[in-house]
Image (cartoon, rainbow, N blue to C red; front, side, top):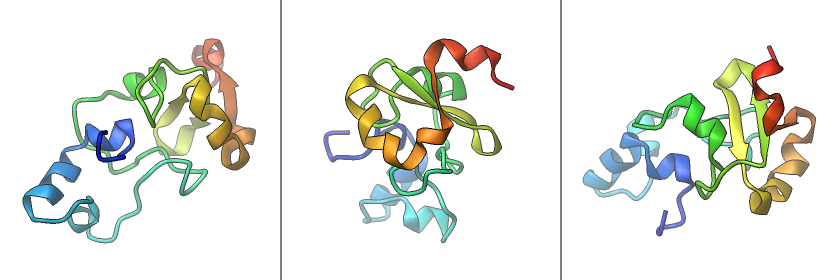
Length: 110
């Protein structure tokens, strides 16, 4: 995260595999597959993520900084929920406002 990678990316083994191969991104490992979050694509919730974070953790924590989530972005076709903290929710809102729900509604949305 100190290298400006999102919380989710910083915990992904594909990023570290890229570092081991001499690149500072995971694109090399993904071989052209799309991955990332709503900053780049409002419908994405890190579909190629591989690591220790569970989907529950990714919903409970802000995908950018790892702080507790204030709002959730509901992306059922792409991993369920993605959390955003108070600081970062406004950065995400323009791309994802139609998919945002309060944290307490997480369990009630199908």
